[in-house]
Amino acid sequence: MPVSKGAPPSESAPPDRETPAEPVAPAPAVEPLPGRLAPGPAEYTAPFASVYDVPLTARPARESGPATVFDWPEGAPADGRWIPTRKKPNQVADNDVAAPVTPPEV
Image 1 (cartoon, rainbow, N blue to C red):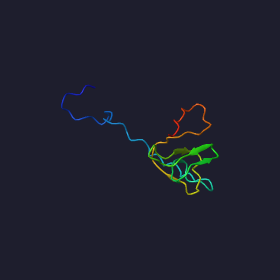
Image 2: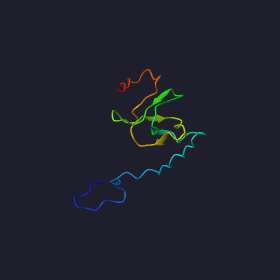
Image 3: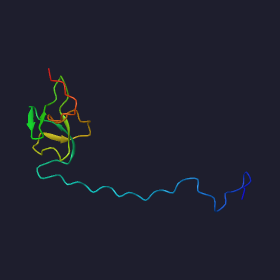
Image 4: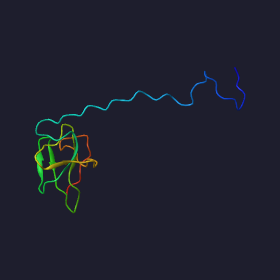
């Protein structure tokens, strides 16, 4: 049935907005593996370079560049050399063939 201009909407008229979706429950917190930090990016904070089992060569921050930030899928080693961060990862695993090569330090 046509509705004239200025007439209030009828009860059967579709709503102007979509109905809100059911609230999504947050994902359960992932428990880190023993001896590891929570999965995700972590920044290397030790004052010396180190090689990890990924294999990954982690380097400290220097005037020539930032510290290694690596996205650890199983969590960074909880050895006191890494801190969780929101920084974008700047390093890939040394054996990642498909990844671009990181320029050498000067």
